Structures are given as C-alpha cells and as structure tokens.
Length: 332
Image 1 (tube, rainbow, N blue to C red):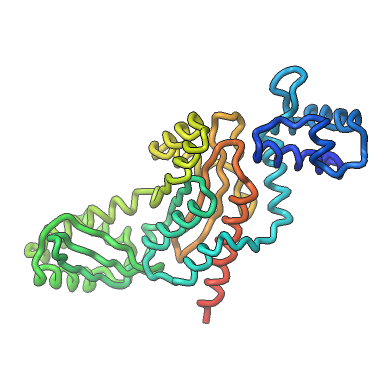
Image 2: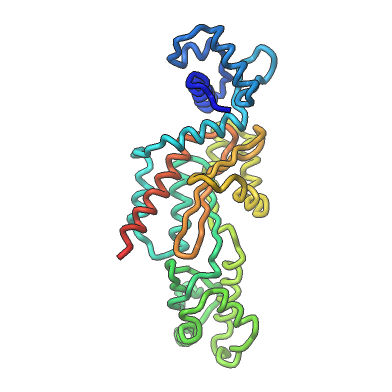
C-alpha cells in the first residue's frame, strides 16, 4: 500500500530514532523529533494506521511503537532510492581499489576487512565460479620456513596457496614447469578433473608431494563457498552491551551451512540485496553482488534487526561504485 508523505516521514523518523536510541516512538516524542504541522492526536492516529499496515508494532499496551521487519525494509529501500555517497569516513574503500592488487585472494580479504571496518559489523565474502578461472601461470617457491609458496596466475588475478611441506629448489622448478606445460589455458576444474582420472602420475614422481598437496588445496578452494569472514564487528556488538545478539551472530559466523543460508537469502532484484530479520533475535543481511572476471562475489554485512542500515548501505554502494569505476578504467 502506498504511504502518504506524512506517513512516510513518520515511519522514517520512527525507524531512525529506534536504531539510534532503541527507544520506542510515541506521538509526543514524534512531535519533538519531526517537523510536522499537526497535533499529537493526529500523530497518534498516524501511528495507529502504520501499525495496522504492518510497519510498526507495540511492545505492550500503552507503550510506544517499534519498527517491524516490514518497516525496516521500507526504510532501507527508501534510503537506497535516494542515496548519494560522499562519506569521507569510507575513504579506505577507495584506497583499496586504487591498489589494483593482482591477487584475487588478497582483494577478497581486503574487501571484507575494509567493509567490516567501515560499518563496524561482521562482513562475509562468498564466492562462486572459482572452478571456471583460467590458469595462466604457476610459480612454486621454497621458503626459508620449510614451507612451499605457490602463486597461481588466473584471468582474475593470482591465487596464493601455502603448502605445509618441504621441497628443494629443483623439485619446485620441475613442478612449475610441469603445471605450465599441462594446464596453462585450462580451468581449475579441468585440472583437478585430470588428476582425478590419474593420467599424469608417470611424470610427477620426483615432485609427487608438491602436486598432491597443491591439487588437494585447489579442490578445497574449488568446493569452498566461504572465502573470508571478518568477525570484528560482532565483537564490537559485545562491547556495546548487546550480548545475546552478538553471541547469536558469532554462532552463525561459525556455522558455514547456516552462514551460506543467510547469505543466499533475500530478493536478487536490487543493487543492494536486503534481507531483514523477521524477529529481533534473527540476523539481518545487506549484501551486494560483485563480479571479478568469471568469479561472482557476494559481499554481505550481518547485524541485528536494529542495525545501522544507512551506514551499511553507504559503504556497500561506495564499494560497488568504485569497483565499477576501476573496471571502466581498465577497459581498452
């Protein structure tokens, strides 16, 4: 149902007030908060109407109103339709993009870190399409720590894999030449499938351990949906006194199946996808889809029902805008 201008203004003020102070809004409070040329009785009538329409609810008789999930959703969608981002506090997002890192792993990690710091909420990056990355280069390097570092060049940037094995320089050189000879121009899935068919074992006896560990690592990378989870925001919720909500969000972050379910919720018909918790104890999510080559990322910010939707939306919109600008600048 279409809201009148006055109802829209009252609802926006009610939601903003509740997010900021956790205080239910009353007709008397509205009179002080909003620049509305009407009586307290009229405001009370408008609050009753918004409650009947499902945007607000009363915690108990004679109390003020608080937003429902429908009310929060209206608020976020209204913000997104009019948002123009100029917030200097989000300058870190721009500096990240300007680095133009060639490491896909680093870019994903930095996106999660920057958005988490900008919003003060936990941030999750979920990827799909990794198996379709085209292999372009292999550099296998023995480290002083007795580990082996593998840099895998793809059409979307480098992937870093650290193998917990010891190998000589010669073994690493031989393994690099082997992977370049057989797999440059193929996808990660094609490579792992060829090893499943076991057709190449005669060539790799001298560096079998490197190959086994690398292929095992790529299979994990292939099958793993969650690439990066930043939990710092949940710890800040703990510090703010919202103990139970923070504990619940932390439990979701630690349960990959539940986290994937949360990240896949919401309608995919908006630039910023909004999934508002129906209950106060559930988790709300705002997320954006980002494409890097053939890899599709979903960057999601998780929080309680009463989260700062304005600040989160601004951070996500700026991230998308800056990535789009970067893509445009890279085109010939």
